[in-house]
Image (cartoon, rainbow, N blue to C red):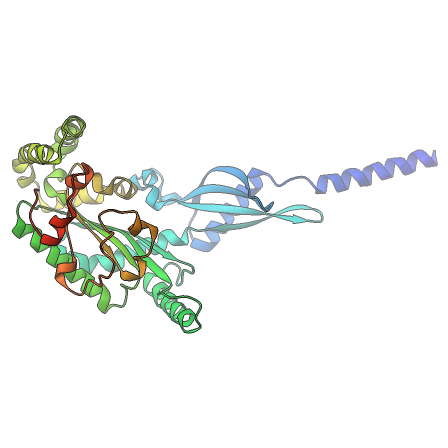
Length: 358
């Protein structure tokens, strides 16, 4: 009897310890992540489908896409620019698995604040019809996502590393795109945009924010804001793009088709135009380089500190851009989008600054 009693208590102890070593569950990870996000950002978050992940060094964690709850059922819900990642790291302990929450949503806040920081100067130079979609790459985000505090801190850290011989650079990269709705129909209008881009570059230099820049300026046909573009002209251009064999043919065809929108565009109010711009999906703009079909010209601006990257080495349009500081207007070039898209781009046309189409 005593032997049976001992076995019974031993079984209870074994089962108790076994229960302690149960794996952490998805529901537990979701609860702890939701609590962490609300405490950190002061608002509730939507936590999407969660899965358990692992790495080669035996680290494990739960991971899910996250978005502030206030963005749900709005256009931002469908825009990946506003989404981020939340995690619940699995911590192995003697009694089982614990969970440690974390996230990288602060990077989204930093990008939004950077857009707000540069927007006034961009509007001063290019007018109201401009949309910055920036991506700031930095190791440490300061001031709860404050752009100015973050880059000032990163600059100090970069200077310190450079002085110690631990590397060079500002400690942050400003990448992404500036989307501008306007019109380029001749060489004179092209020159106006070159000068405006150069003016913005000089502003960045004066603000000591041009040390690490990989920035594209996209000039989109303003008439594409007319409602009939999405319904009729845009789809027709996409179909034509698949059939027409040369850039010159497509450029001529597009000029005629876009001309059909002149009256539609002229009838739009300024508020209607801005409303259309603000409806754009930023993630889509990034993925499609502005849409391409309605994109006239673009300029890719790299600081010399980034010119050794594979991005430059592998881009046939930029291999010659080895020593540019963008301190002269001549160093700002506008590329013809369709020429590039059709692989008919001639690099000498850039340097001769000749006009090769719309």
